Amino acid sequence: MKIVVRAPNWIGDSILAIPAAYSLSRNFPHAQIWVAAKHWVKELFVSHDFIKGIISLPDDDGFKSLKDSVRKIKSFHFDIGVLLTNSFSSALLFYLSKIPERWGYNTDGRRVLLTRGVALKKGEDSSHQLNYYLDLISGLGLKTSPPKISLPVTEEEKGKAKEMLLSLNVNLTKPLAILNPGASYGPSKRWHARNYAKLAILLQDRKKADILITGSKDEAELAESIASLMAKKPFNLTGKTNLRLLAGLISNADLFISNDSGPMHIANALKIPVIAIFGPTNPSYTGPFQQPAVVIKKDVPCWPCSYRECPFDHKCMISIDAEEVFETCQRFL
Image 1: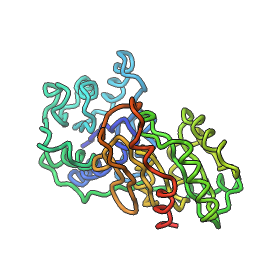
Image 2: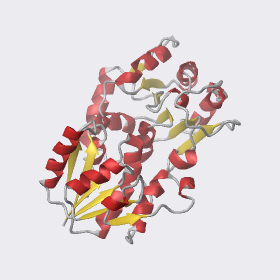
Image 3: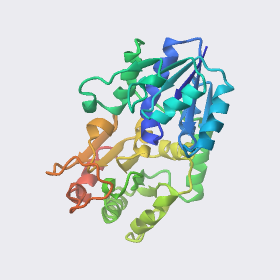
Image 4: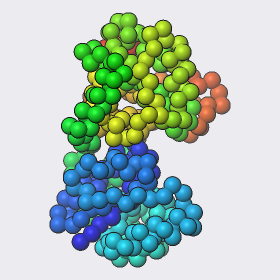
């Protein structure tokens, strides 16, 4: 039997969906489990031994891309397709690929495209996103494995990351704190650059820590704005890593400080201590799932919101002080 799992499109969601994919493999121990994923998240699945292979999907959802993806998936002759995405287009892809069994949530008007649809549980919005994926598996009448996340990193990957750190003259005898100041959703989820700079200076001065900044190439300007406020410049690898290298770097760190973002979940899966700074979003849904982690969040009247940019004073983030975050960091250093 061959089963293909359509992975979520976001980094954090893909990490949180891994327990559901693993549960699927435990229910069908003799089946091949494949993952179909966008190219920017596919690297998250390559190190899991229960996954047979990865099918890379194109960036856009246009007609030509859909046609190419249908041809690709159809060539594997899958028996079952499980949708961990909620979109109509992802269900249409499996339908057109003539996968006999197509399972997923009854969302986005796609019930007609599924052979087994699962209704959302009442109160689903109050559950963590990881449980949302596991609930799909249990809703299909299958057993679920204990809810925990992991991301295997090979010794070779750790070694390459360590070599890169040494080439930057990072002192590995000192604490290494990684700052992840970006968030692809938008500025509303970002703690301000000046606060990250203040925190980094406190970690340098009081804990003799080396500071590494990571992020996508689109966040390079943000990283530079932080570095410009620091006398002792941080090591900046913004836009210079792929997901596997990023995981290797994080595995060498003592602390990971981040907004609500995908890399936050990578660090949490690697069991590196996480300080998660939350503003407009709810950590009950998308916060770090397991220990060691601390969420720092302020209660404000307009919380929670779905704005990408705050139309007011961004009080949920401005109210979080660098000294307060530093005191929390000390628990792990």
